[in-house]
Image 1: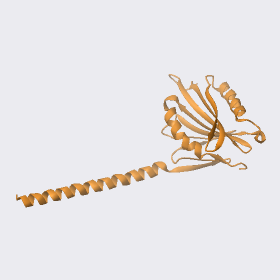
Image 2: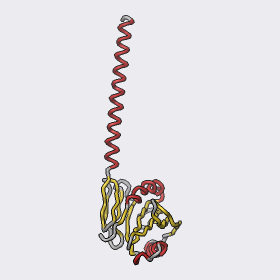
Image 3: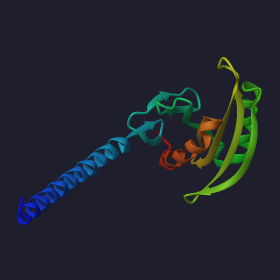
Image 4: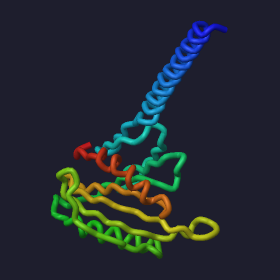
Length: 192
């Protein structure tokens, strides 16, 4: 084989390798875009004046009484988001009072319920109140597991909206980061 023929073969091989690389990168990019679009699709929840957004494949269960709904990822069933509405008695009830009443009820239902932290907050220009708590799940067979939760209380006209996360302790920190988007998506319009 002559030097010229060898050079042409090498150039052809380089072009072929470059073409394969470009096609592979385009295919991977296209796949990533499709995957991202599929994962980022969301469903809009509207119940009793409360609206929220969650990923498209999540389970939504209707609530009863003051609990409006509960939602969760079917692949991570130990992490639950919920929204409740409590009466605000004409806008006169302090958020701390509503939180205290809720603590008393949870303390009666969950023997091991403990408040870890309470603090006033401002989130997206809304004044509110945040309560972090924990309890032991004694309903599951085997070794009991600790669940952590956080409730955000916001005044909403004649109601107080409570946006909650509960997760097993090992999943809590990671789920709290994802919960932030849900928290910011929840709103309430009175009169519905």
